[in-house]
Length: 329
Image (cartoon, rainbow, N blue to C red):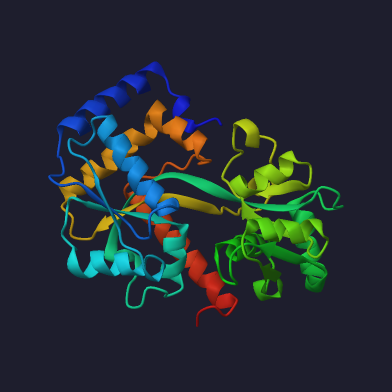
């Protein structure tokens, strides 16, 4: 992959080195802790453990990060714990993702809202894709969406999440951006995982597939599937470089299954700024680029206020689409 951080001048590299030193020598957590809002294994657990280890390996934190698995409620138990019991803990960070934003948008964390915490930074993303079978006459995203506009019953889109889940929302984001007036007309069929959804695509039971880059890649390599759009701001690099974006086809649709962190709302400004700096310095490191490549993470570098605004925008967008399709009132 081609990562933004690799395109740096010598001056930027020197600046990065000085920032690294400053963040390493500045504020330090006394007992660094990361909550993974799920059982061991999976994305949130990976986010905490890999970032915690890397922060220490690079000297950005002085003590070992304690990882606490706090499963329940699709992340809701951990969110409530942070908001209600640990609201001023400056040593604590929590793994989050697009799933966190989706559940907040849909009211799945009763009584909790996205602005009850402080959003720190992203560490990468797995971008959404929309694909068709290799022998499909459809070759572009506008062609598919025109079919949906003209006759919604003619197209069924398969995904590996439940109705209202992230796979479903990705195709609705694209349809909404293209001007489909009533996204409820988009026929989405939920399957138990992306693999089963692709199987139905290849069987001809559905006309399109919505999933993530990482799960579509193997089917592209085998010659079974063609990706007609990646929901990323610009083309991905390396082995994904041939996949066209929705944006270059005139459809401003971004669907990033981002991974990152939030923190207690009462965390001190000094601690917040330090955590943002440490995670940012980690993101820029060659070591993290290798970890991203090995784990299928694409570039998404958002920090501090920029990340806070990104999450706010994501929650509002998901909320609006969820209302349109009747997931929430």
